Image 1 (tube, rainbow, N blue to C red):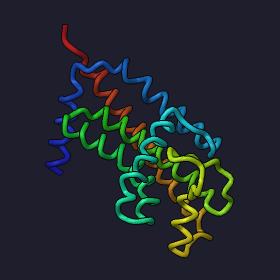
Image 2 (image 1 turned 90 degrees about the horizontal axis):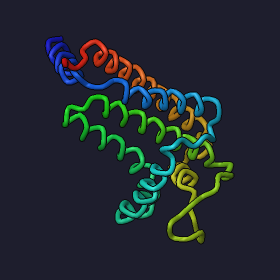
Image 3 (image 1 turned 90 degrees about the vertical axis):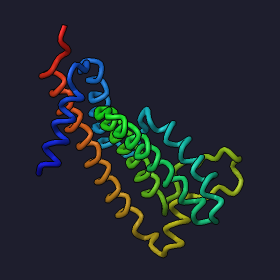
Amino acid sequence: MILLTEFLDNVRERCKGKNYFVRLPVLVLFAYILFRYMKDPLYCSVFSGVTLGVHELGHFIFNLFGMFMGVAGGTIAQLAAPIIVGIGFYRQGDFFAVTFALGWLSTSLFDAARYIADARELVLPLVSPFGNEDIVHDWNYMLNELGILQYDTRIASIVTGIAIITMMVALISGSWLLWQMVRQPAKN
C-alpha cells in the first residue's frame, strides 16, 4: 500500500504545471477511435498505417527464427512496439505519454483481432513489401499450424475484449492525469 501511495504521489508531482489543454485532444481522439472500432470492426484508425509498417518489419526481423516465427513476428512486433514505447515513456516519468502508448496498443489489438477473425474467411486484402506472390495470411497459417483454426472468431473476440479494456484503461488513467494537471496548474 505504501508503494502505491508513493507512486501516486510521484505521478501527481509529475503532473504539476503540465498543460492539460494540449493533451485533452489525445483522449478525445482515443474515445472517438474506441467508438469507431466498436461500431465497425473493419475500421482503420490513424494508427493503422504505422501499425502495418511495424507489422511488416516484424516479419522481416523474426523471419530469422524460422517460418512460424517469421509469420508470427508481424503481430509480435505490432504489439511490442507500443509496449516498448510505453516503457520508455514510463522510464522518463511521462505518465500521460504512457497513456498514449496504451491507446496505441489498443488500436494495434483491434487491428490484430480483425486479422485473426479473417483467418478462415480470407477476405481481407493482404499486403507485403516484397510483392504479392505467395503471400501467407498470418493467422490462417498460425492457427492452422496450431490446429485451432476453427476458433479464429473466438480468439478474435478475446483480443477485441482486451483491446476494449486497454483503451478504457488509457481513457480512465489519461482523464485522471488531466484532472491532476487541472488541480495543480503552473504558478505564474
